[in-house]
Image (cartoon, rainbow, N blue to C red; front, side, top):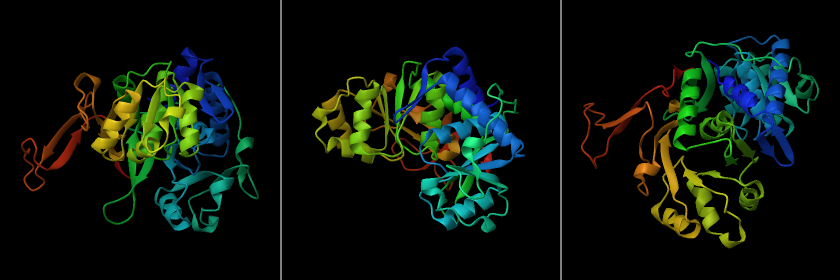
Length: 361
């Protein structure tokens, strides 16, 4: 099993379909897969070996997508790095994760700590390489390289999540975790190759990485990628690219509702999704009134890859996070006794399924 096989499969069945749109760039599935394979060869040429970790310190650029799949093809484990973190925060994660390499870019590279403070890092790779760093563009090789076979229990990615106490913890997601959750996402959102999903949410976060990027590339759809959320750019992209899937957090919906929505072409939308925080009832009601679309909410966390429950079309209830997705069990218990609580009572959510992490690094 290997999450990179999802890209390879889509490239086989949909070679000339558009996989990725970023600004004026258009990547077909064939181009994206071959570029990822070529990069994978280049990474292997640096002496990086299966099981080693590679830090992805990149904005929402095509280079993030390429490096993620290139690393996966040769069994490297991507560690996603928040591009707005301070040097001390980045240094902690890189050192804790024992990254053998880091891929960064000119706009954010200055946030990294000095190399002398990163003892595990053998290769610093930069988009727009400078000085002693390896130039990202120089890493190339066999564009026909295929993803290696890995055990389903092998770690596919490490995402650091804010801890309730102490330092951030590195969540280890296996290839089974990511593949099963990606498949569940495409199933529940009824995703097809005709879908185009708009992503301004960070790819270093599990929501953007698995729920959006991996799911769209798994189904043969198109990832419309934006570096960050800018209201006018975000809404203009919906009409310009025929976006069918809208992914946002509650604050983004509230900002859109505060503007003159009549100037936007939203006619291509078929599904609107919100997660990461609870969506208040009034914005949800206003969105339905103005667009004709319900906002589907779900529940998840990085430790669950992240998708755990969904407000299904078949039993839609405004304001609800829905019921467990396929192959996932959930219950709410009293944390003091471990016993399930009655409906309407507060408790702790327990989740069981193939989406649940391997553990913390």
